[in-house]
Image (cartoon, rainbow, N blue to C red):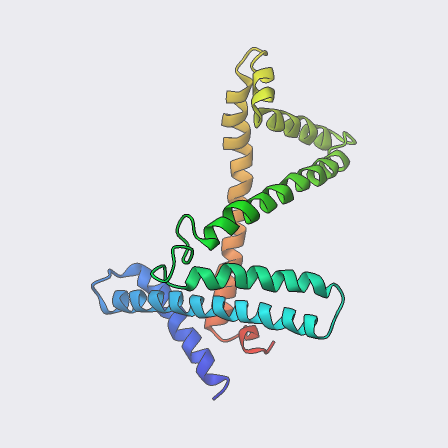
Length: 219
């Protein structure tokens, strides 16, 4: 029963959601699709709560046992509880609760999380530049083409570089937008998306047919 019930449930849910694409909402299959979609949202909420509980448990255990870098675990706990608890309490208790402008959650998000995110991405820019320097070396005709194209695209993405490209005849920014970004780059992106979609479809079939059982802790 521990194996049969999850497999049957996954098969029914997956089969209904796949077949429902070919039926309207007024039909029985369409109604089941709407019901299952609502349950997906509910289960996702419980999954989020489970993730928060797991973060608290793991970090609290590390703090209690004084594991390596345990002071940082305290900061993680303070951040999770400091943003989580005030945001779920009703605004009727205090204007500082909830997630409306002026609340504790809004203040922490605007003046702590946003600056930290900006700092992180600003730091990543230096690593990206370093990786690009090592990768874009004209060692072959293909690498040279990649180097030239990447340089033009990076110049096109910043106002100063776009102004520099406009000094050349032929409207280079428009050429990059049409043929590089809308042509070659779009074709590669679509190929990647198609490959990812085929992989997701094959994994979905494995789950629906009961071949893949990793969600039950089995191979």
